[in-house]
Image 1 (cartoon, rainbow, N blue to C red):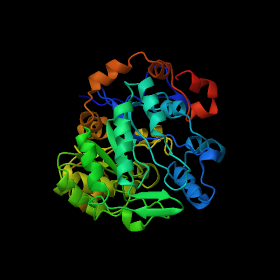
Image 2: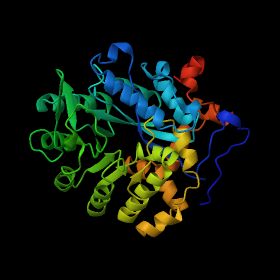
Image 3: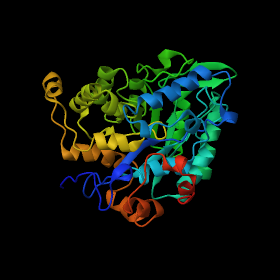
Image 4: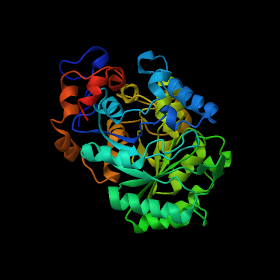
Length: 379
C-alpha cells in the first residue's frame, strides 16, 4: 500500500483537506464537543474552566487560525461544528464520540449521552458512541448504564476516576471492589467490550492519586476479556504506561493530548512514541484529537510522513515508524476494535454531505463556528 501526500484535486489554502493513506481511513478515537454555555458552567470553578481553555490554546502551537476565541470556546459547542472539524476541515473519516460527565467545572454533562447518541444516529457511518456515568452511587450508575445501552445502543464506556458532586471531588480506584468492579461487571453483562478510562491528566480539585496508574493492572487482569483504553496515555507516567502495555495485551494507549505534543513539543512526542512502540508495537496505539479541544487537521498534517528522529531511535532502541504503523495508529486499530473496516467506512460515507464538501475543497478551521450557515448544512 503506497502512502499519498496530504492533497486532493482542487484543494488549496486554508481549506485544503488531506488524503492520508491510500486505501485507509482516519479514525479518531476521542471526540467530544464541550457544552460550556453559561448555564452549564459551574460558577465556583473559574480556575478549572480557565485551565481547560489554556490547554486548548497550548495544544495549537503557532497556529492562531486553529485557536478558538474564548467566546467561541465557552459555548454549547455545536456537534455539527465538531463534525466539520473532522470530516470537512481534516482528513478524518470516522470518530468515536465520547459522552462526558460534569467533571467539576460543569453543572451537568459536559457532553450529554442523549445528545451524543442522537448525533451518532444522524451519521451512523461516521461515529461510534461511548456511554458515560455521572454518579458515585453504584446502583444508580448501573441503572444509568443499562438505560443508555437499552435506549441508545453503545459501543463502549467512558469513565473518569473521580466524581464531582455537592462541591465534593472524590476519586475511585479502577481495581476497587466498591465501585469499579460492580460497574465493570455490569458493563460486561450488558455486552460492552470497550472501556476508555481518563488517566494521567489531573482534574483538580479531585485527588491527584486518582489519576495515577497503580490501580490499572489489577483491573486489566480481572477483566481480561475487556479492551481498556488509557486515555491521555503518554501525558505522564510514560515508562509505567509502557510497562503496562508490555504486560497486558488488553490495554490500548489512546494518545489524546499526547498527539498535540507533535505540534508543540515534538521531542516529547518522539520520546513517548518510541517507548510505546518498543513496548507493544503499533497495534495498540490510537490517535485521538479530542475535538473540540484540538483541531484534528494540525495533528494529522504533523503525522503525515512522521518518522522518529535518530536520537530517539538510538536512545530507546525501538524500530522506525513505518507507513503501516502510521495507518494502524491513525485508524486501523480503532476500526478493528470497533468492528469496522476501511472499506465499510468508505462505503457508508461515500457521497454524504461531509464528503461532498470536502471533495469540493473543504473549509478553514472551525468553519462551523465562524460560518454558522455552513454548520447547519450537515445537520
